[in-house]
Image (tube, rainbow, N blue to C red; front, side, top):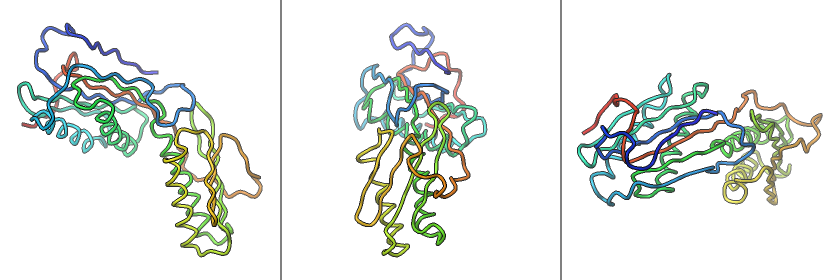
Length: 260
């Protein structure tokens, strides 16, 4: 696992006097098992910034800049916004084997999540494992929805699997009753997949049953593989990250870009 030690109390580095915000994002390779989009550890500290102050739009500027620059090949970017006591410093670092689009998706989600977890705080540490798990299961099921609804050879039935480096595999199944149209099957299954986040986002296995369709995913193969459809060709690998911000930038070097 890649880890970072970030002191949280005064006296970190005497040369750093500017009240700044550090926003740090990194992907880690961890073996925490199966945890669905759950925060392992988060800490909010460093006092509050005032709502509707200049600090707040500066923070949003930095978060926006991190998102817009998150497709860089090296997976790293830093910058600042504002001046004086309302200056905000931010950076992200994506794990080296993460593709640019996945890096961007996680940064977008992480920026929203850390604001919710640490509202108005000037300092936080935020570790998350398996952040993209829920999305990956949905990706698997949505791919099966398309197969079941629009491939005549599937008889409105499809199965598949996706792999996790530290956990193993998740198996999915979707099916519609044959008395509905392809479009109705697609709508029914899409709605079922969308409802997973409301009822079952932190579960290894889940099942949604509707009058005209059903979906299911489990950590074991619960269907007859001989009758199943081929799995999606793209192997979905697990992703984890560490994120933090603080009211002082310490030992991180000079930012590459500044907004005032």
